[in-house]
Length: 155
Ligand code: THU
Image (cartoon, rainbow, N blue to C red; front, side, top):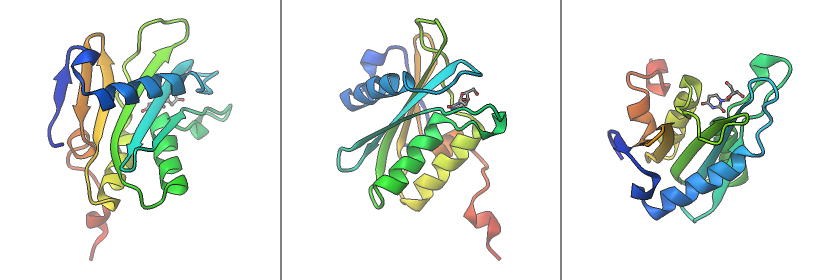
């Protein structure tokens, strides 16, 4: 998809998106986030129906922490080479919070999503929880305008 859609309610999303959000919520429970206590789950849908889930993985050496989105994308690329990503959902919650937190992916993850779109020659939908009663459906190129990519490096 191009552009950005905002949904007031998860119920307004299509069934596949709702399912992926559900899988992302499950994945967030396996986050290793003892430092930030910010638990992120990501779920990817592949073109053959495979669902790949991942969570953020932290380290006492803070810069080594890895976001859930990038874990999910790299798992998809290594475990399911050649398959096309059609959709991605991201959710987060804070410790002891019942409600979801904003899971608007960081710039580094948007950059990696963009390269995945480019390498598979196909955009994929990105669904992120932004605020209570606000879900965003967009794509990497919309979420990261004027980005740096392989074309910048050409002679
Ligand atoms: N985090 C993600 O998993 N995804 C993002 O897009 C932003 C941040 C993780 C990294 C770290 O473990 C924690 O959230 C706090 O930054």
